[in-house]
Length: 304
Ligand code: SF4
Image (cartoon, rainbow, N blue to C red; front, side, top):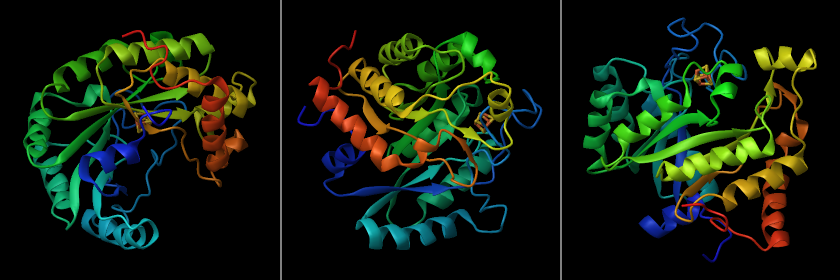
């Protein structure tokens, strides 16, 4: 591979021949790990906004959210086509008719060529997947499963409300339907060593997924993780530790897995730490330099 890793923009460029941009949509969903179905507290790092903007609840329709963002990204990035990214909370957690209505609304906007749907692995079944499979005949459909780690002990500590077997089952029933699968992994989870994190990379390699999003665990105000941090029960990764672990993680992934994200983007007003996470540009540069320094690449140490 020319590049050190298989990035999302190159994937879009190779597939379509032009720039495709993701537009984030807040469709007003909830999450079973927050509404009491599994728990009321949610994952220890999640606040009551669930990474959302709250736009739908403020009366801005899915279509209008896309149209507003479209204007901006066309001007700024010269993007031609768009993927509607259902990001906030759990975007398959509603009756099937409601889901269809929302996904149809997004796909009905001019130049939207696909969907990316973020969800929990315990919130999909054959009916939802059949719906997505139908869309996938004419559109690019990605499903993004919050995996976070392959270690059950950690999943318990972060109050995830599902185990690793649940993620494996979700991937199993999703594959071979024309739906692309991405998993999210978080580096720096409480109690995890670098070796634990790299075991998650090995687990992902065995899943035959199409993409991965990596995030550093950052502490947001008004979360259980903030309490843990204030009590001295949690210590953030340093930027150096994160950069080194990301590169080792990608070395262990197969070459064909698309790296959709290298680090998350905390909101400055909500962030408790680590503050280096605010400088995404620098983190990305350091990751690229680390690849060069080690003379390494994605898949160098892949075990599949
Ligand atoms: S699954 Fe997502 S939305 Fe639900 S509590 Fe966890 S991080 Fe928040």
